[in-house]
Length: 144
Image 1 (spheres, rainbow, N blue to C red):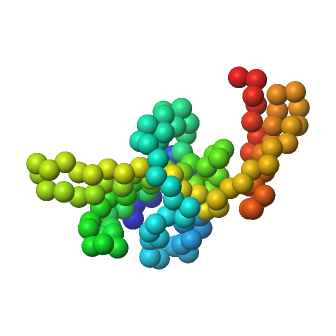
Image 2: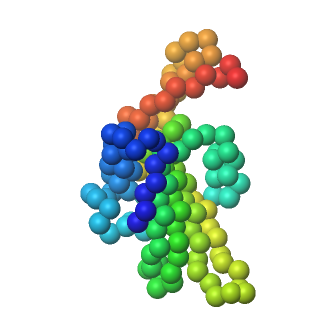
Image 3: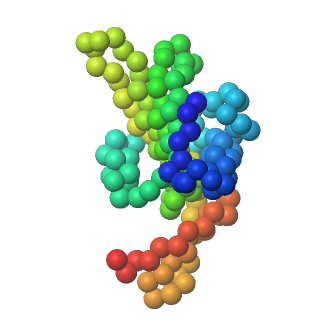
């Protein structure tokens, strides 16, 4: 498993890696990788690339592994932990195939918690969303 963070290589990287692994239900990088991912849902590829072109990510994970049905695949997991993706992000699963057969690509969202947000107005165009299950919060400025 390769974990790449967009943060500087200093003490900020370790908390990101710990939070990522905890969100996946893993103690360290040597634990069995979970499949399916927590609260995983299929999505369109456009949702991932649109998000990645506008917002930053905390870390990417690249992993070659064997699916439960025995097929081999490469998983590219983006850990976002922003907005509705608190403690989660996106996943791209590329099923291996032999050339010239094209590879099958699947897209997913995932989160450690299946968030149920409650919205609170905190100002004229300010809103605070809080998950009623895990307590994750984030603020939205709707004046844009």
